[in-house]
Length: 174
Image 1: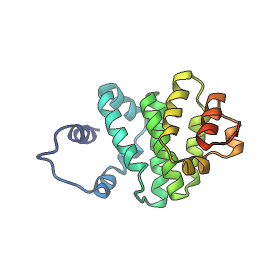
Image 2: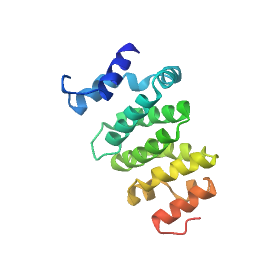
Image 3: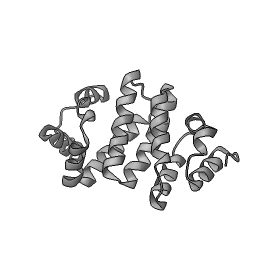
Image 4: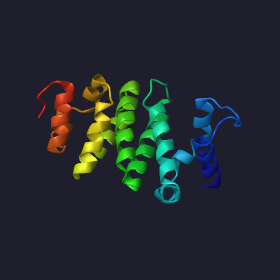
């Protein structure tokens, strides 16, 4: 945990004196940390919520990029994002998780990631959560969104989500 907090501080501090690492080196070093449990997320969220949010935002940008990840690592990334959303209950984290996971699943044709996105969206009931997810949907590629949400899963979502997805895809999938 202390090493993660040190890395977190380094990520948000000036990088002028830090050792440069490639994205792959950082990902490899943090692979085990992405598997940390809900209590670890809660500890970090309680101690440094703004920093954890900033790091997750940067992480999500990388995950949602066209960067190639190993097939199995996609599941680790999706499960980590789900734990972050579930444990923090933060709309900013939800928004970035939705955006990045839709792109990740589509870019890697990874059905487990698609299932995680669907489960996250199906669990949304509160107005603010739904709108955070809609903001995340707006930041995705429409082709990726169409791949992620099929007609069956669409029917299980809140009406506001169904309408937003229909608008984004230019269809009446309500």
